[in-house]
Amino acid sequence: MQIKVPASSANLGPGFDSIGMAVSLYLTLDVLEPSDEWVIDHDFDDLPHDQSNMIIDTALKIKADMPPHHLKMQSAIPVAHGLGSSSSAIVAGIELANVLGKLQLSNDEKVAIACEIEGHPDNVTPAILGGLVIGTNVNGHFDAIQAPLLPYALAAYVPSYNLKTADARAALPASLTLKQATHGSAIANVLVAGLFANRYDLVGELMEADEFHEQPRAKLVPELAKIREIGHEAGALATYLSGAGPTVMTIIDKQGIPRFKQLLLQAGLSDPLLEIEPDTEGVQVVDSVSYTHLTLPTICSV
Image (cartoon, rainbow, N blue to C red; front, side, top):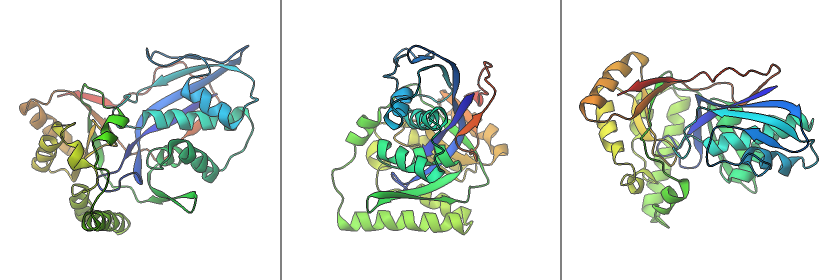
């Protein structure tokens, strides 16, 4: 049995901690034979192989008496790059508990558990449901609504350095004035309305008008402003900081990516550019165990 979880790109500009989109980079978890103790094979130097691993730890928090198994994890999701790598692990753990524990959780229940663990819905919810999701916490429970996907491809510029979420959050101001909060909220509100009205021109403009997090984080990701400028030159709809960064996501017609790539190269921006798409399925479980490598995105060495 294999569990497959997509990466996610959060915020989409002004939708801070509330809007997220599943994208076509994946974590896979092969559930192998029963074992005397929990063991998870992977190629990540800094992650544990025992039950303290986030995937197993999450599963055991939900269903503590599951029989231990031998697991094998592979992931094409860059760690500490604003693409929901930890959220994909949490979702994999929830699905592991759901399957081995025979819990028969609904999607709403999975979302509630994931949001309780993660604290906000912008990454875990699209990883569960797929697509573009808008969510929040109200009166002690999480609500999420799927919005229409934009009919564009995605180009993710992945800088060579990591950026921990804690460091990115530390760059944010402790408070905003009422005027700032009101205007930032209005931008996010109209962005959501634009998504449902298929007003792509408006959506693109508002994605680049965030007033909550991108400006204070810009000094941590100096490439953002230049990539946004190049995106405009290449005809992109919008460019935004994916999650806490440092990945910079550009929404663009697929046929525009070669020129976008060329312009990045001319500007000296040579880190990997991943050609990806929105994922519409969310977490999936397949019966057959596969040891073949993950299907990787197209990587443009710009």
